[in-house]
Amino acid sequence: MSTRRDSTTDKRQKSQYRLAFPEESRGAAPMAFAGGTESELAERKAESPTSEQWMEEVCERENCQQALRGVKANKGSPGIDGMTVEELSGHLKEHWPAIREQLLNGTYAPQPVKRVEIPKPDGGVRKLGIPTVLDRFIQQAVMQALQRNWDGTFSEHSYGFRPKRSAHQAVAKAQQYQAEGYRWVVDLDLEKFFDRVNHDRLLAKIAERVSDKRLLKLIRAFLRAGVMENGLVSPAEEGTPQGGPLSPVLSNIVLNELEQELERRGHRFTRYADDCNIYVRSRRAGERVMSSVTRLLTTKLKLRVNSEKSAVARPWERKFLGFSFTNHKQPKRRLAPKAVVRFKERVRELTRRTQGISLARMVHKVAEYLRGWIGYFGRCETPSVLEELAQWLRRRLRSMVWNQWKRGTTRYRELRKRGIAAQEAAQTAGSSDGPWHLANTPALKLALSNAYFASLGLPELTAHG
Image (cartoon, rainbow, N blue to C red; front, side):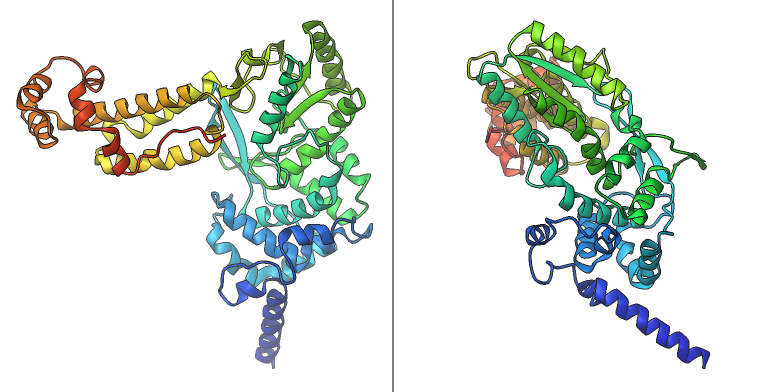
């Protein structure tokens, strides 16, 4: 009799899982929503859910399918429980009915996040909190519900972590303001913004539109889940840990109040995450705005402005999302100096002599990095800088090859094999000059030509903005 009950329960759980994740239950990859695309789902959900039905929307089938696809697409490391993204579908297949019940009755308890530190480009470290894969899935589902019902109320000047908006659009808007004559920038740097968010203020803001106490309780639980570091869990009294899907939309909710005030004052501004630039016509106006906005952030929003990194300056003296601008009436986007430094540092890492790999493998690794880099920084409008970087990169690769050849006889043989005349090959192979100098000589430029590197898969650094 007990075996029959267990079998019936198991069948009921599998049936509930299939209702929530029908494609996954057949072992196939998640597919588009039955009955529409993601944008169509967003249109259907344009109206806020019934005041007490937010958790039902979080747990509904289409929203969960979309959340599962999002977590799989983002990949990422396991949290403190060690579960991988690949294992999530199987876990949901077995446990989703119980998890759903916990969400709907308000008893779901997130696990602490795993502390990970990554180096910042300008020094120091950025502390990330990696939630478990299951918590990332639930955060993603909550984020989607909040975003569908909140995004339409966000400022048109807000570009971070929003559908159909990007950092490139934020930079283009900054460029537009400068062309219109607003050639001073109030560059605000929010000190440890994600670590400083006040939980009570944030939840009060959400509660203005969400009366479902289960969802409010769940968001508070995520905020206060704590951080596990070296085996010890520390409580979280403030902040939204970077690393989870929910943090970006919560940060937009926090800073929406700032944007509403800037719009009320008629300012021209653009914001992406915690990078906010306000454009004015004079230094005096900029200093006045810096003072009043700093006061608003510290007294009302309970945030801190980093006075050392914030400034009133000319836009071409500052960087914004990796770009800067030329000092022209119609300014052009250019690479910020730090972006160039980071590019060279990364290429040096990928082309270290101590790796002991072939040139083809080295070029493959560099090419993977370059494709992502070009996708973002290829929007710059100063192609000469890209060409200089491309020349530097090829010279770096030539110097690496020269080091790999090591002996004079090997160097001579390889140069001759690549069509270099005997006298020039002997002179180059016997030179006492260093690899960096020789990498710029006619012999190596011909032996290891641009076309040769292209044949190995090295992409061109060209502007496409």
